[in-house]
Image 1 (cartoon, rainbow, N blue to C red):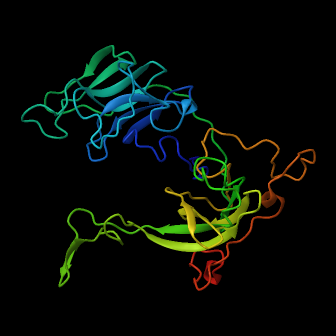
Image 2: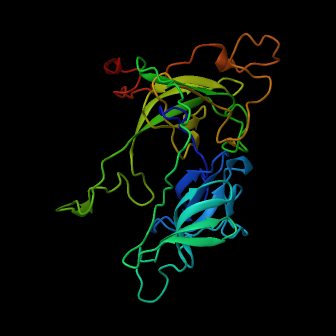
Image 3: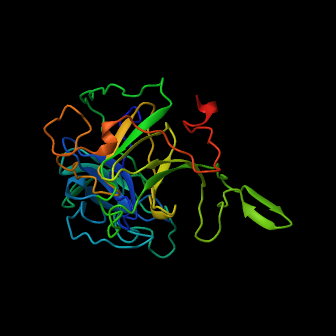
Length: 342
C-alpha cells in the first residue's frame, strides 16, 4: 500500500498454498522484486531465501525463485516449510545480486537443539551462495543487518486521502472476468453483497475463562470446527448490471469482502480475503479474483469523454450507488445508510 494507506492490495500469494509464509521481505533496489524468507505457518521466522518477482506471476511458485544457490523451486504444501538444513533471516539486498543476511549453516534439526537455537551470524552473500562472514558472536545469534551509508531520500508521494469523507468507492468492470466465477453462466449473479469484518481482541499469553460450560481461551472463535474467527456484519447489497459491472460506496477504514448473490438470494461465490479503502479513495477491479497483472478489458472506460468506445461498463456511466440493506437487517453503525455514521 502507499504511505497514506491507499492502494491496499496483495503483493504475492493470495489464495495460494505456496509459499506457506513470506517474511522479512525487502525491496531489491531499482526493481519491482523483493528478497524474502520463505518459512512455515507454525514455525519460527527463519527459512529459505528467495527472490519474489510479481511480474512473472503472483500465485504459488510462478514468481518465486529460491536463491543461494539458484535452484528449482517447487510449490510444496508443507506447514513447517523450510526448517531443515541451512536457515536464513532478515535479508538486506544491496543490489540485484548481493545482500547482507542472517545465516545459519545448520538449523535446529540437530539432536539436543531447540527452536530459535540456530547459530545465526551476519554474512555478505550473493544469489549463487558465495559468502563471507562479517559478524559472529559465540555468546548469541547475530541478526538483522542494516548497512550504514548515504542513501538518496525517496520521493514523497502526496496523500490522496480526503478526511472530509466517510466512504470510499469500488468500481467492478465485469464480475464474470477472472477465476472466481469460472463455469457460472453470465446473468446468474444479480447482486453483490458487502460484508464487514469485526475484528475481536484476542488474549495475549494466558487469558482464559471457565464456568459450568467448561473452559476456553478469550480468543475462542465465534464458531467451532471449520467456523469463523471474526464476527461478520452485512453492510448491504448493490445491483450487478447486465454487463457484469457495479459501482458502490463502502464505509472507509473498514475491512470488507464480497459475495456474489443470485436471483434466489443464495451466495454463488464468497471472497476469501478482504479489502479496505481510505476516506475518499476510489479503487477498481477487472473482475472476480482476476489476475492482478491483468488490464481492464478493451473498449470499456469509466469516462463519458471516450465517445469513440464501442462499449462502456453500465455501472460506470453514473455515480456510485449506495448499498441497499437486506430486508429486516438494521443499519451497521459504520454503514453509509446509518444516520449515526453521518
